[in-house]
Image 1: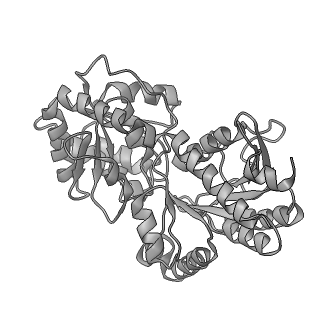
Image 2 (image 1 turned 90 degrees about the vertical axis):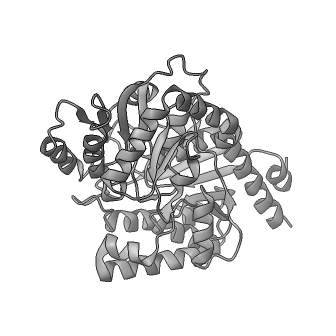
Image 3 (image 1 turned 135 degrees about the vertical axis):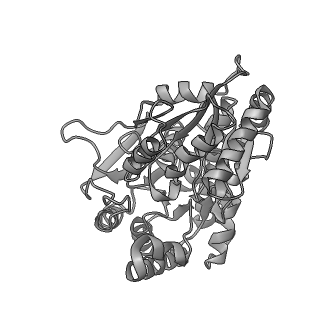
Length: 399
């Protein structure tokens, strides 16, 4: 098969660039990229370019069929306040620039996340120097005021400027929500991004056998300011006035965890709300199958994968209305959960009570909501669209 025919029909050589690899680093994007890499590796040659996040001498926990190349770019990604450090992305970006320049003929296409920005710029520079074309995932686009809150006046201005540069350097792009696609266009992107709604990589479970749920509010995620986890204990305390046996299970860790635990104690909820930290997925899965609802009070979400995971188990979700919260698009009011009008304990408590009052009917409707969208919400549907874009890009470049 000659080079032109390979580009049209044969296996491709794909480089996925992201500075985190699941399960060495835990998060929605990490799980998304691992699933995409593994699916693509069934038909293509896939290399995952990332930081070294594993103990030296042990090697990475690589997805099946995927070559993982790790570079030393710093192991500590976050400050004590939960903000991304600046130097690891810069170091990773420089390492990617070196690798992609030295291996310009090794890959047919480079697929990178926009965040943390510097690897995207490196991939774009390597492409300009004769390297492979680049496709980019824009999970989120941050407004200037968010940059200022995140890094302060000077750091925020610099971060916003780097993001603008990255938008200008972006060629073909994917987003995981229509919200992110619209915001990307507002920030100067001139093409039309492909919206991928399928990032669920779990099983299609049979209808829940038990629709009478334990009165438990579940959270699973990082304890960072954007997730607003500290609102949950007081929301539970308020809702317990109408649901006296209500309990909470708050999984995860991060810089806000001490504040969460302090709130639990302040409100006298030590016997009602558990905060066990990070836990194996099997434990979270078991809790999700029996919980009354999932609570995700984030003010910003590029997608909100945990809402889909909960719905697959018949568990409704409570999210918060917000201009930067794409998770609201995954909740059909009164069907698979509720959208709280404000990020306040009182508003969240009201939503908890509404889920409780809906009872087993909402478990059934939540499961029905998921089953009706299972195909479009699956990773496989997105990977099919990703492959089509790869092919179209390469065919357009074929003489």
